[in-house]
Image (tube, rainbow, N blue to C red; front, top):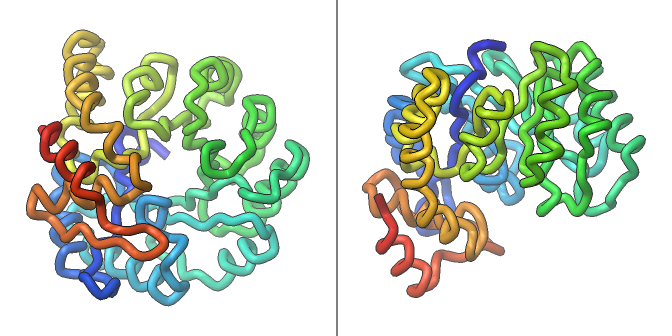
Length: 287
């Protein structure tokens, strides 16, 4: 899966004020990000997958595949906390043209590590495309441990993990003991360079919606061994990153994109548009 090395952008889903999908802006976003990223991630958390219908999700995926001018790989989010429902979605979703799925660790019901393992084993068995695990304890209320990740890495159809635990020691253990071709991917924009340095292959990024060129520089400098240059690019993102999540994702990044003229800032309930205070912070720190 060498085509998934580097930056994957967790695409927002642009919307009109009435909450309908703004496909014109989505096309503009694909063009904007396509100049610097290595692949697209459709229907992650940043894409507001929780509040889009199955029909809308398929329509967005189809649109991205059709308007993918650079023919970048596309990763599609399919996950949940009801294993049977996830399997049924895998069976009934047209994944033609999709390079891999990104599947979040089951949330809310807080399964044991054995439960998480059996869930992903079932997902890997049913999926017709490779599976990237997604560990984000801040949303799921449980951690996909390094030991369970390494156990899952032995399954043929599981090719990597998006690690958003923020635990570098955990990431290092995965990097140290994983199979050679298993991909460690940062799920935290601010740990992009750290994950590269510890043996990871890239990042699935929120901020790459706005600043794809910065992430391309971080990757290129990291792979060239130019650490100081890569650090400079990473540090450029430090102040703007915090405001992205103060009022929920993708509230911050959508407002930043509106300042860049890419799309409007509208989100669906229960998220709401940014407060005046958050707007001022983003306007202050915009690169």
